[in-house]
Amino acid sequence: MSGSLKAQLKIGDNPATINKASILELESLRQGLLLPRIPDTLAAPLTTAPNGMLIFFTGDASLRVRRNGVWAKLAELGVVTQNNWSTTGNTGTNPTTNYIGTTDAQGLSIRTAGTEAIRVNADQSITLKQVPVNGTLVSVLVIDPTTGNVSKRSLSTAAFDDAIRSLNGLSRRGITIRTDTANAALGVTANDVDSTITVNIPKVNATTQKTGLLTYDDWLAFSSKQRAITVGAFGTASSPAGLVLDPTTGVLTLTPADAANPGAISILPQQLKGPKTFLDSLYASGGLAATGARISGNAIVGGGLTLTTAPADAATTENTVLIRNTTTGNIEKKALSPSAFEGAITSVNGQKGPDIHLKTGTAGNNIALDSTSVTNTITLNVPDAAVAARGVITTGAQTLAGFKTLRDTLAVGSSAVIGASGSNPNSTLQVTGSVAMNIRSLTSSGTITETDYTVLVNTSGGAVTVQLPAVSGKNGRMYNIKKIGGGIDNALTITPTSGQIEGATSYIIYNDWTSVTIQTDGANWYVIRK
Image (cartoon, rainbow, N blue to C red; front, side):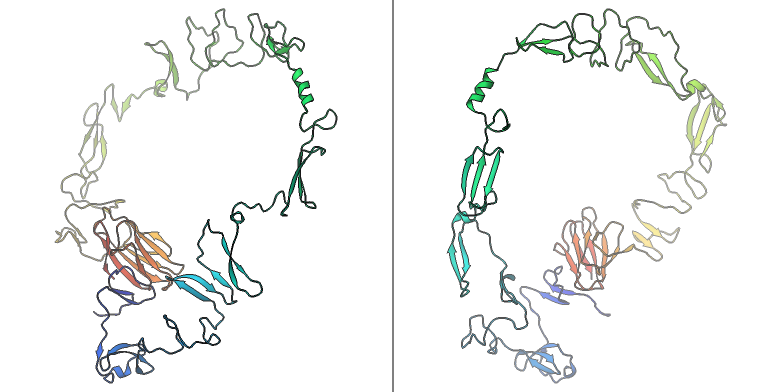
């Protein structure tokens, strides 16, 4: 392999998942990294190796790292200094000099399973990060203000759910609620001085108190004034109210309507005023006289209909006429062609009627109308397309001339040759010249479409997610995706809409100038080259 490799590399299991902090990652459940076995560290060019190189020295079966020009032996687990804390506890400690913490004005984080649980802040305050919620426990922690010791204390359940914090703004422990009828206003008064709440319910009187409760005597006075209302006979005189109630007898009388007053319709002659709308039929057996009439629905005329005044002439643009339906007898409207008023077609391309025939043909080298060869016949000639003829595409072999643009899909059933006219292709697709594939750039998240081939992604503005199209029906489709900027802090994530990519739900690129060529088999995406 020649050239240089500028990309992240993952070897082993889960090739689509790589840590962004690694330039080379190995993953396996049964394999490891086999370092070079070096029997002599003085052999060239190991004597000039750069710092950071790692080897396995067979002389003492140890791992060696190149540091400051020498091969330094890595410390073993059992060789630890007394300044290190052991996971099983230390002995000989002094709380004055030995402690777990920081000396650089930073907080101390205590974690389990990689998640922070307790933080001792730089100001010695403590923050509990993962405190669960419990709705039944009543024990709380209290702090002794003198010693700072933390103790447990149990509270009443009312302290969490049922305790009343304030009542009408009063928050003292002892609150008295009383009633009063002397205050003229109906309401509640809170007194913070004596911690009392007074409910004011006044009584109604005949002079000053208009709101409040009725006494029993007042209620009896109202009850004695009740009277039954009786519906009387239809009135003869009109009334502005349309109804008349006799205050003495309690008789309610309905009065007739006239031109000045509302009321009911009687059997006697009446004059009514104001527009009236009848939503259903109106029958006038004795005749109907109207100064002006408008009928918005259907109308049936049993006798003749005479127009004493002829209507005005219609505009020349109006082509709708009234006709009589011979089956139903109804008068209906029908729009006629303007030619019925202005004159019909009398000839077409010199051919005269009454019968003119239209036919098709293929004569000539252009699309043209022939109206002279056959009497009463007009022929539309559309020739087959050829090098010297404009026309239609047939099912047979044809040679076409001119530049053609297809906006949508072109499917070739057998094979095609591009760039060498007249030669037979030796492959399904043969190109005898250069090839240009579509290429575009992305600076934010987006979706790859059927018009894409190469996509350049710049993550300088933040992490970018590229969505692959659904794989169904796209067997064999390929894309080239390359990260061209943004650094390892802003990742490029390639996510399939359906299926997986390299057996995972996404493929992440951290390093700039890293590219992948992917292809789908119609079910999943696979990395073909990177």
